[in-house]
Amino acid sequence: MKFRLKKGQENIQVMSGPLAGRKYVRGEVYAEIPPEERRRFEKVPEPKAATEKKTAKSATKPDAGGGE
Image (cartoon, rainbow, N blue to C red; front, side, top):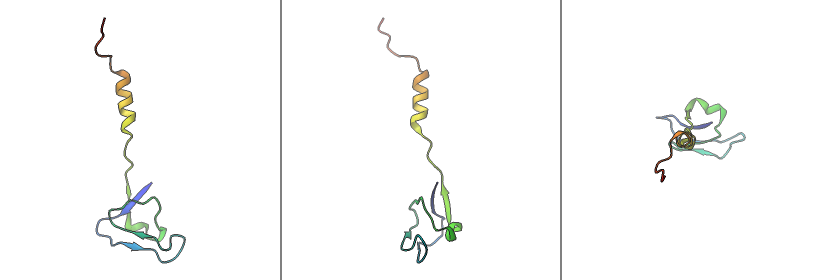
C-alpha cells in the first residue's frame, strides 16, 4: 500500500521513533508512514496491470492476414 499527504496538509519531518529524520513532502508517494500521523495521509490506489488486459485481448483476437 502506498500513501501521500492529503491535500492541505503541511510537510512533515519526523523527530523521534523508528522513522526519525525522514521528511514527508506533499505530492510524493511513500510506502512507509509514521503511524502517529496516519490521519494526515491518504491511500494511493495501485494502478491496474495494463499488460494483463492486453494479454487477454490478444489471446482472444483472431489472427489477421491469413496468407492462404
